[in-house]
Image (cartoon, rainbow, N blue to C red; front, side):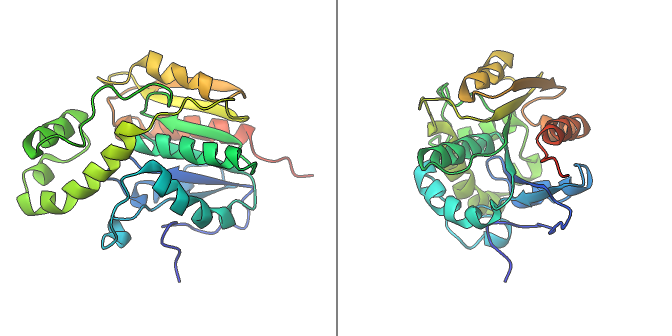
Length: 250
């Protein structure tokens, strides 16, 4: 049976490293479905599917970070039998950091590199929580983020279905804060959008405090969803970072 936590994975016998990809709020694993075509051939992409979306739509979404990591870690552990890396976008960046912190706390192997995108550093509180807003205000904030199609926002029945998932995801993102020390013993490359109205370069640069390894920052053209606007540049940057962390085979 297909693993519900890992969707669209194409097992790669040439793989030397697995890249786990965590979605933004409301997003599903299909975001990363084609990434394997644009990354180094030695990388196996593992898109993470959270409860409540796509093929897991019937499951209740999880709104608490600790509860999510409790479920996520044993599900992903069997795939961590080779070097691996974490990429997370917006909410997914917080999830990838929380998962790495849990691995560190338990003395387990860490990712070779963390690749957070479109989120402020984990020790910086999210200043404007939106998960609790009344429905119309909530929809307006989704518009401002530019990640939900207007047709969906105006479709009442669809929003009745999507709103609980989005609110659960934003609760995870809004409330995640980590000041745990020491910093993670791994490399980290952070990505941000040059026109992102809420997460500026300083907030992206602050990820440097989250890990003790080499650090790199890339600011790409686009707003909070530069994932769509600068997809090619984002994948090029990820590829460069992953190549530096591929195991050397003799």
